[in-house]
Image 1 (cartoon, rainbow, N blue to C red):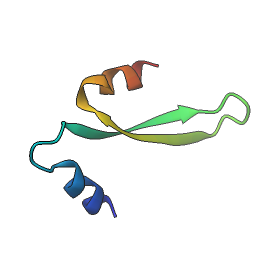
Image 2 (image 1 turned 90 degrees about the vertical axis):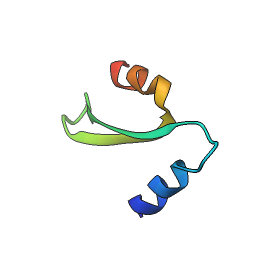
Image 3 (image 1 turned 120 degrees about the vertical axis):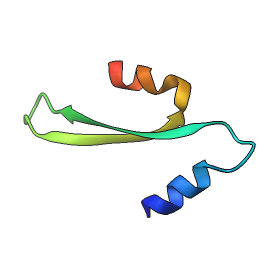
Image 4 (image 1 turned 180 degrees about the vertical axis):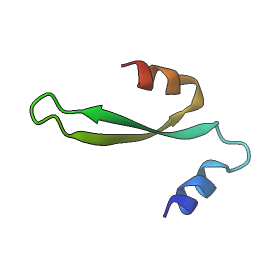
Length: 50
């Protein structure tokens, strides 16, 4: 499935997109979950800061 997503993000003439995945710890349970988003490459840094 990941190959299909990556293939569609690399169409010629489109904006440069990236898939970002970060690990987030729950305050309530202490368990880690993964948050995944597809976004413009320019705003990926803000995703990891916030």
